[in-house]
Image (cartoon, rainbow, N blue to C red; front, side):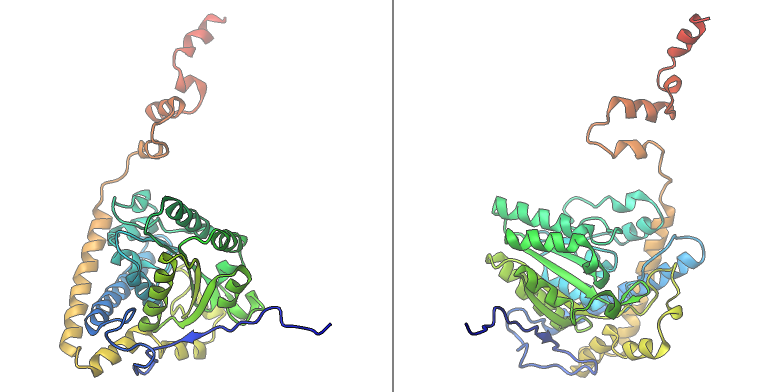
Length: 376
């Protein structure tokens, strides 16, 4: 019997705005669905500046002992903002990792909550009502399972909602990624899996993590749609996410988006990337900085100039200074909070521990002191 091809596929790479600021209007005709307008491009550039400033100050706070470890978002702002902007605020849900600050702020998360989180204050995870984002996920990959469950619930309820979950290239080596993808595609849930492929899983390069040439192709094993985009091109990221969202809403199921980007900083402030990355690689990616690229574009179109740049930098500086003031000026938490927010209704044993600040039997029930005395 002749040999036949059982399966064949290709992975598309989408880039609309190159590193020189050149825009391909054939791929994204202005005025069409899923294409950013000039006004939106300027708006998103301003948000990039604010997030970059927040990153710089967070690094300073950590180095001065005023914050614990912090993972900079520097270099990945377009991936977070472009995808977050494509999701409907107040309707869709964002399930982040820890390099999506810009998207979280865009959907209403107060900036100081991110600072509180990295200062070790659990109140940083108290997401305000109406803000459709989940807390920052530190365990690698677990958030994809949560996102899948949420999307399944939306499908069962027939809610017109989508979920986007973020993770890095290293997370696709975790079992949670594969379990989430398998469940999500099998049940055809309205979810977008957004991989920020920043080339490094801490100190391990992508090429040593996996044998596959792309992250995107991993979706093929599960029957999901997939696309690879220039993660530093906010136009490409927005369009890919917008299309994935609309496909999910129409019942088309899961899409895996691989945003090829680069973290310009260390993995976290506890890391020193100079020990495993060469300077030539970093310099090459610095020229692809999403902020530089977008500024070239809006400047060439007459939408931006040095005066506007100075104004937004001053605004960002003042905004982040206020965020620091609010974060460091918050009143100290009480020990009661360790107990009060574990359950909707606190169990009696925990209530006793809270009220007595003791865990041993005598502390929980002081009346036992009489029993001890009576036994002699």
